[in-house]
Each structure stands twice: as structure tokens, then as C-alpha cells.
Image 1: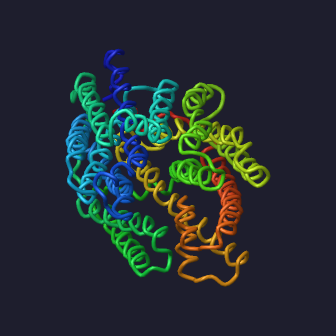
Image 2: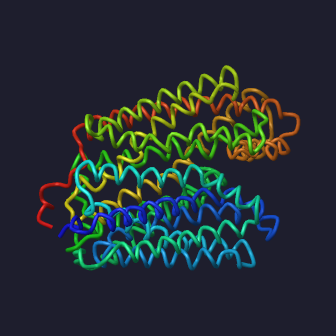
Image 3: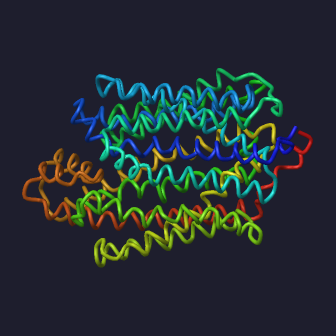
Amino acid sequence: MSDLSQPSSMRWLQLAAACLTGLLIPLCFTGPAVVLPSISADLGGTATQLSWIMNAYILSYGGAVMVSGSLTDIYGRRRIWLLGLGWFCAVTFAIPFMPSVFWIDILRLLQGLGGAAAFAAAMTSLAPLFEGQARARAFSLLGTTFGLGLAFGPWVAGWIVEISNWQGVFYVTGSVGLVSIVMVMVSTSTTHENTSGALDWPGAISFTLALGLFTYGMLLIPEKGWLDTTVISTLVASVIVFSVFVIIEKKVANPMLDLSFFKQPSFVGVQALAASPAFLFIALIVVLPGRFIGIDGYSALQAGQMMVWLAAPLLVVPVIAAMLTRWFTPGVLSGAGLIIVAMGLLWLAQAFAAEGAHQVQLPLLLIGIGIGLPWGLMDAMAVSVVSADRVGMATGIFNTVRVSADGVAIAVVSVLLATLIQHNLVLDVGALPAEAVIKGAGLAALGELRAAAELLPGAELALAHSYAESFVYVLYALAGLAIVIAVLVFMLLRQQGTTMPETSAAE
């Protein structure tokens, strides 16, 4: 049964609640990065413990989001949405009272679980509310708010810290979560929901463990390198456990993941599209400030202002893209957006190579415009490629790919940058202590150029030159990746719209 019979005011209030959740959850992904120095000054903590304030949320959110999607199919969107938000708020309000960074890391793991459940339910709640162009516009708004949370989270968190303290970031976040709970309670009901099935516990446990091991291993790479024993054993274990998961899903009667989905070209295309912002946008948000501050001499505030050129298009472009679906399919618009991203990345590489950071505003703007085209469209496509009774599963897979790709992309780009810096250092300077070069290159890739220079005394200029040159090569590599994904999207999603398949019409 469709939710289209709900009063219009309630449907739009539910959309607003979904968008608020869509803003809140990613805000907790990028925002706390700004408060790490304040937490360190207050509570101490090692560099590894501090980094896991970010990594713990990524790990648990990515590992739980597909299971959360299946839970919405079984227990209902409203119930999972409220439980997720309630859990999220309780943990968020507890974080400021923790006595050490270790306990903050533990609560960030728990916070990610609540965030995954809340966002999975919020996303699946929209599919039955709207049809046709209205659905495209609704999902474009959800995608826009999710993007704003990612892009502007550091700025908002920095402003809160400036006027209060690091604890204020979590108090404000928890308060917004409480507002979301009230909106969900008012705008949703269980009378329009069809629920069925039971959770595939063996599949859920094996999948979550496999994804958790894989994400953990990838997050360790910038710190330990590809050849570290822990990294290798963790990644190998993830492959073994994932193989067990596939065997389980082929044998159980009601699998958590219907493997037949991957026989559909459109479904595969949507997953490729879901991963693209991680490499072409999120990775830039992470690595560009280090470039601006470490190489170009910008202050933290100036670096933040430069990032607005990249993030600002997400305020308007996804909404424009939804309107353009009257004349172009979402697949075509998404592919065109990725081509624009590739052009922007090539332009950005050339600008950095020629004049440093002085003429990069327009390339950043072009990248933001390009990624904004698919940003709000891919959410709607994720639910349009399956029948209505499998929407929870489909959105769970989609969000798992999207969020897990963030951690993977950051790790891969950091490792690529560190490897290139290490190679260029050896070419420029020659004989240097191997261990110092490896550690220095890794620190430089993370934006810690001063710390890297302390490990390599006398090689400061060579380090800066190696970083600048390597950064340009990374941008060229990302431009090539954007073109590859664009070709896949044109091939697999060219005709893809945002209408639910006919098999779901009876619901």
C-alpha cells in the first residue's frame, strides 16, 4: 500500500524530517575533525586515538547501514527511524562527559550505529511518498542536505567551538536529533507500512564483519603502509569472511542481500555512481586543506574559505538537476556531471602546476557543479531499480557503498599521494634514511608537512616540491577515474529514470 494517501502537509513534514536526518548524520562524519585539537588539549590522547574519533564513526556507519536497510523492510521504517535517532541522541549527549579519548572512540562507534539506522529509514521512507518528478525532487533535496552536512560540517563545528567549546558541537548535534525525533513522530505512522520477513542473522553478522575488517584495514594503510602485517592479515580476513557471506546468501531462503540484483546493469551502475563522490569530492575535502596550509601558506580560515568554492554548488545544483529531469534522464545527467568533474580536475591540476593555489577557485567551482548533478539524483535511482518491497535492502546496499567508499577513497588517495612523495623524494635528494622517508611521506600526505620536515632535516624544500608535484599527479589520476565512471554510467544508466518498477505497483 502506498503512502500517497497521506495528507500533503504530513508528506512534506516527513520529507523535512528526512532531510534533517540527512543533514545531521553526515554532519557527524566531517564536523568532529575540527574539534580534534580542542579534545587533545583537554583530554590528551595519542595521535592514533584521536584519528579514531573520525574512523570509528566511518567504520560502524558503513558496516551497519545495509543491515539497517533490511531492518526497515522487516520492522517498519518509522520504528527503525525513531530507534536509530533515539540511540544516536543518547550516545551523542554522552560524549561530552567522557573522561578520555578512548571512551569517546567507543561512543563514536555506537553513534555510527544509530546514524546508520536513522538515515537508512529516512531514505526508504521517501519512496512511497512521491511519484515521478516529485520523487526526483524529494530525493534531490535529501541528497542536497546530505551533501551539505558533509561539506559544511567542519565550518559549522569550527564556529560552535569558537563561541563555546568542543562539547558544544555534540550538544548542538544531539539537540537537532531531538527535533528530528519530534518531526518523525508527528509526520509518520505505521498504518501505511507493509512489513514482512525475518533478519538473516548469519548473513548480517558475516557481512558486517567482512565490511568492518575491510574498512579497518584500509583505514590503517595511511598510518602503517600496504605491507604491514596487520593490514595484510585484516584485508585477507575480510575477503575470507565475505566469501562466507556470499555462500550464506546463496543458501538462505530470505537473504539480507539478493545477489540477483547484481545481474541488473542498472543496479550495478547505481553502485558505481554511489562510490564516485567519495573519490571525486570527499577525498578532495580531506586532502585540499593540507595542500593549502602546508604548501601555499594559507591559514586554517583561508583554507576553509577556499573550500567553499568546492562545496557551495551543492546548495543549488542538485535542485536544478531534479528540474532538468523533465528533459534528460537522471542517468544522462549523472554521466554529464562526472565528465564536468573530470574537466574540473584537469583544470585544477594545471592551475596548481602553473601558479599554485592562486587561480584554483574556478576549477573548484566546476568540480562542485559537476558532482552536484548526480548528487541528488542517485538516491532516487537507488530505489527505482528494485521493486517497492525491496527498497530497504536496495537503499542499504546503496548507502553501504556510498559511506564505505568514503573511508576507502581517503585511504587510497592518501596512500597514492604518500607513495608518489616518497618516490619523488628519493629522486630529488637521493640517500635518506628509508624509515624516515616512509614516515615523512606518510605525514606529508596527511597534510602534516611540518612534522614531516622534522623527520627529514635539510630536505624541507625537496619535501615541499615532492608534495606539490605528487599532488598534481593525484589530480590527473582522479580525472581519469571520473572519465571511467562516467563511461560506465552512460552505458548502464543512460535510460534510467526514477519511476518504481511495474512489479511494485500493487503494493
